[in-house]
Image (tube, rainbow, N blue to C red; front, top):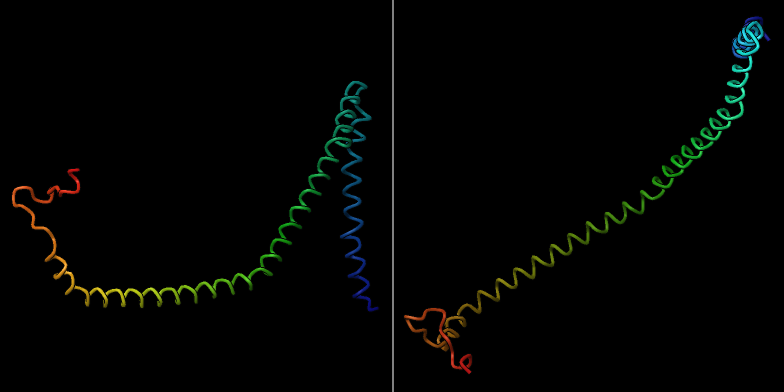
Length: 150
């Protein structure tokens, strides 16, 4: 190992391991010294608060952390399922597009044939109107036939 690499490794060890332990020790040590210097009544209140934090809040935070991990894992798994489902959904989309084109073509053909047949039968419409009963001028379209009077 080169001296530079050893120096970098020592610096990383101090920076990432030893320094956080010193900060945690000072953070815990100063309140302990303060508690020991206070009167008996204040010590009981501080110890009670510390016990509530340790025995109630810390487990709640840990359970919340586990819930957060479960939710994040479910999000990742849902993303994977979405990626897997993308190809079948794309195929279904393509099939519906082709079906749409076929249906549109078929309905256009049927509509065109209907218009052609209607145009050819327009002559018969004139003939069929010859057999209608003549309407009287006074009654208009409210003419009552013999069948409805019975």
